[in-house]
Image 1 (cartoon, one colour):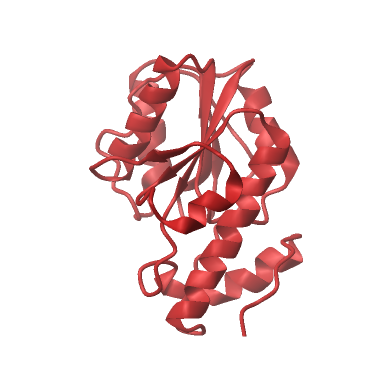
Image 2 (cartoon, one colour):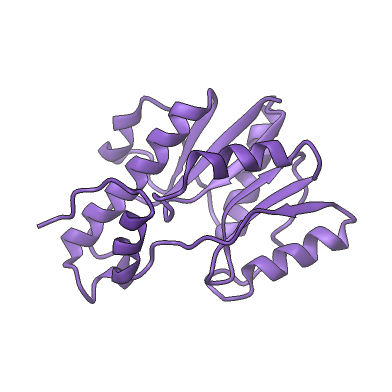
Length: 201
């Protein structure tokens, strides 16, 4: 099964990324942690898969040149509209399936990613639920529109996406519940779950 991995990644601008870490870290430290998280996610995907693309909000930023990967503009609109654009582009370019990733789960193990791909053999969509009501990955076999009416950054993202899946008569499978790194305490938790990182001074 040919699959394209699309990593939705924000530009590491101090004060604009990982703002919920700033109760314990400075703006520069939070941006450094964002870069460390993104680097871990991107390098893991490169190691496991042949077709990996970075979908960036500013393709000209030098951070993205570190990875020797195609860099695509995320496009306009909310997160769902931008992910839908990335999916459509991937399938138009010949991808057999698509896996969308963010950069908030640097502790994600190889088995979770590989399990998502394997899950597409039996289901139309595979989701990786996280504790805040969203998901850390979405794998999909065809470019179905799954994001209409999803209220992003709410606790209903997973349930609203599942509603759209069921409305279209599609099948889904769910991976075990994990967590995103959003708050300072999540940094320590991610390290305990295997994320190898040097914390910024």
